[in-house]
Image 1 (cartoon, protein in one colour):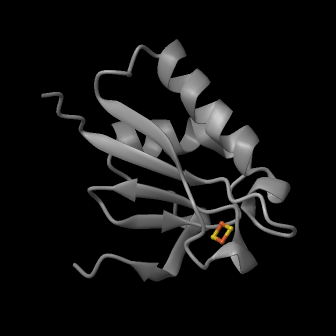
Image 2 (cartoon, rainbow, N blue to C red):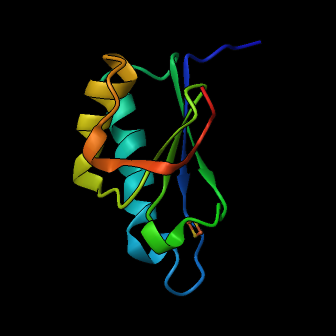
Image 3 (cartoon, rainbow, N blue to C red):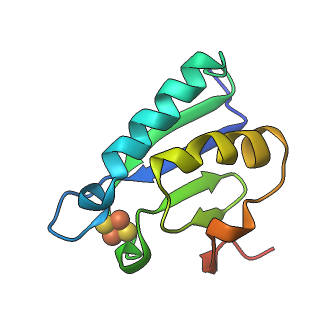
Length: 104
Ligand code: FES
C-alpha cells in the first residue's frame, strides 16, 4: 500500500466551455511536471477528475485531504500552489473557492 500526503485533482472535463477548454489539461501537465521535477511523487498524487459543477469558475483544482478547492487556476499558478499549499500548508487565498469545500 502506498500512502500519499496530498491528492491533487484537476478537472479536465472536455465538454465545450468546461475546464479542459479553459486550460485544465495544461494544469494537469504542469502539476505532473512540477511534482516530478521536485521529486515529490512519493508524497503528492496528481490525477484527473471529471466535472464537479464548478466550471463557471474553472478550471477547478481540488486538494485532499484538505478539502480545499481552487478556482480559475492557470498553469502558471501551479508552482505557487505546490510551494505555498502543498509544501507550506498555506492556502493560496487569491485562488481559493470559498463557495465549496470540506466543512472544518
Ligand atoms: S468541467 Fe470542471 S467543474 Fe465542471
